[in-house]
Length: 154
Image (cartoon, rainbow, N blue to C red; front, side, top):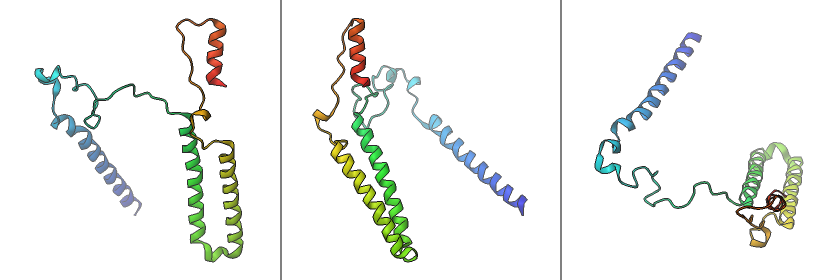
């Protein structure tokens, strides 16, 4: 019985390995080879990653604003709350009034935290709530460089 299960796992692992080898091995063999065609080597788009038919512009290392990360964290926090409420909704007959009171307290705490975030301005995307940009200079003195550094750190 145990040997049969081990063989099934081994066959499954072998099948997964074959699928991975085929997926990684066939594209280089079947794809177009630009490096073999001299007329295609000079094209500017040959070395550029495919970007939905639009030529990429600017730098790919653009830093999104801090508010983006805050909104992402708020989404995760309040999305996990939905999973707890779903589990409670499934178990309503077993929990009764005690479960209802517990969920009411849970939702009240979530609403209080949402109100706190709203009142502190964490959900604002206005230009005045964002930090000012760092001013760059060619050769700042030691005092000026400390001021420029503190502008973003604090």
